[in-house]
Amino acid sequence: MITASGSRHIDAMGPPPPAESPSLEDIAAAGSRRLRDADRLKKSSDELEELVLAALRAGNHKPTEVAKKSGRTGAHVRRMTREAGIEPDDRYKERADRLRKARTEAPA
Image (cartoon, rainbow, N blue to C red; front, side):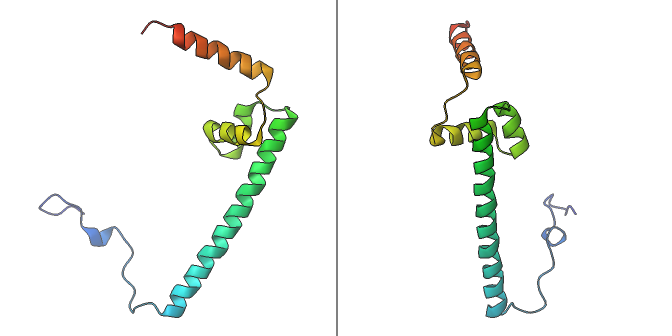
């Protein structure tokens, strides 16, 4: 909702305030859920990283396909592989070198 001053009406944008103040037990329970969820997220992220690195070590899939299917960005997957000590496949390394050389030789 837009008011006469042109700014949005805040009340229409968020949930209504609770009828009563949350108890400390409610806050503690929410904090525990958050920690549990964070632990679960960390575990699933670690498992995903292991799968991505195993796929790249095996070399059966293109790195771009692995990145897309994992939901990670190409830059993140490249960083993971560098940190894991995985060298780029010669096919991809040669292409990257050619592209890099073409960029530096291109007129500005």
